Image (tube, rainbow, N blue to C red; front, side):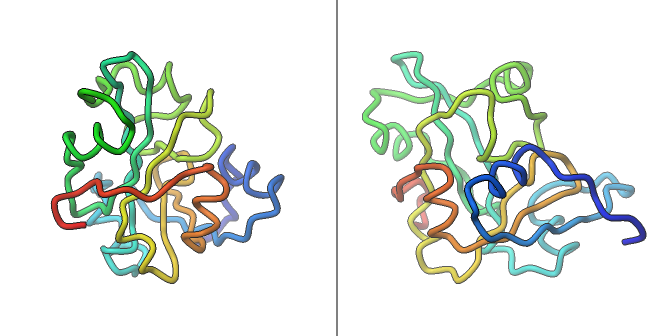
Length: 162
């Protein structure tokens, strides 16, 4: 790491909330930006790295779900968690206008509007959780309880494994 990375909106929001975090950077030169590859690049256990997913319920409300990068969001469990009949992933072309972030760099912090946020149950067993910093190539590491505090999130069963 030759130069210090510029702060992202997500990091600035955490600073404002006085929440401790560590900023992590990784190279995107090889094009591998999937969560499992990112975990390897930053030397973190894959179960500590979470992806930020945005879905819309049948009510047209939007929700944010954080699940381990190696797991899939179970849409039935996600719908149950937020009290919707059904939820579907937001199409990729809608992510940027909706959140202010690009696919692969979507942070649970500092979206254009705050959305109700759910974090997979297994995060409560972690000492540290790692999520996107709001741009591809940057991650934020923090205590899971600080993630919940900053997102006003709640734990839920979101994966078949949780």
